[in-house]
Image 1 (tube, rainbow, N blue to C red):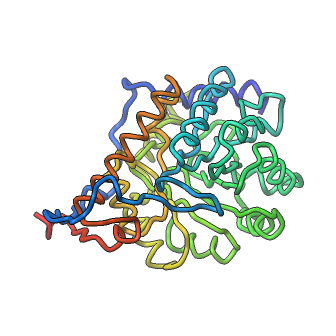
Image 2 (cartoon, rainbow, N blue to C red; image 1 turned 120 degrees about the horizontal axis):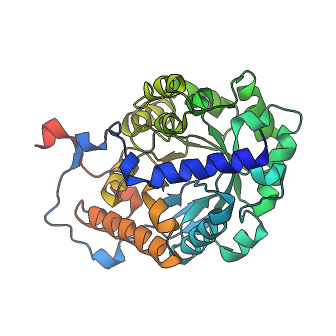
Length: 347
């Protein structure tokens, strides 16, 4: 696929996700089935609640990851700059969008060491698709992706459904697990593996844990449906019909989180996929996540201004802080022990 075609595809993705006229009914995340028990006597100072945590040796002011976003070459420079500066300002982690094009062409989309200079203190995560790891350049790509932005870790994203529905997508997924294992053994930096919106099952999570992966992002159904996005991009009625049948495919985020946490009690986990606000974030943290990721929910602000990105994530942080306050949770450790009830018991 030519670089111009890759860029056009990324532009299409951004346009579709941002277009309210193309908003499609989404799978529910499952968080709506849970409700915190309200604490009317928190015995806490709201402003003293500690949301701090760490990731790969770097301190964070709140357990939020600005998840991987992408865009066309003409606008991704600003998007990446806004996200990096906002993450530095608020003390959050950031995962960059796929670096495939940046590795295979001169179009770096702002994915250079300048990004690290804008955000010198945050956990910064590089990003490659799993399908790019199986070829002879796989390990070299992984190393260059990390070096390109001076990242603390590498995200490897799994998107078999999207690739299956995408014109020119990577259809041969044989050897992916072995490739991931080679990278984890040789990269010299932690490896995070994430889905892109269809969820990680407990079975796959165990395989990735055994392959040496340092952290998992369960990225469940309930946020952006990349099957539906590819359906909107489809060039023929046939391809659209195939793609749209999978618009609600996947493991809902809350279900994936609970099942993976049960299977791997000690595995560091990121919860993403339809996290709408700080209350969803609090529920995810209580159900076993160590970090919570947002991408599409912040995309409009990322195409607007730095101030808009900061305001968006400050709202999420303030919502999370109030959720801690009203569950009597002085910090994130206490939040994991808050009373979170299934809705049928809470109502």
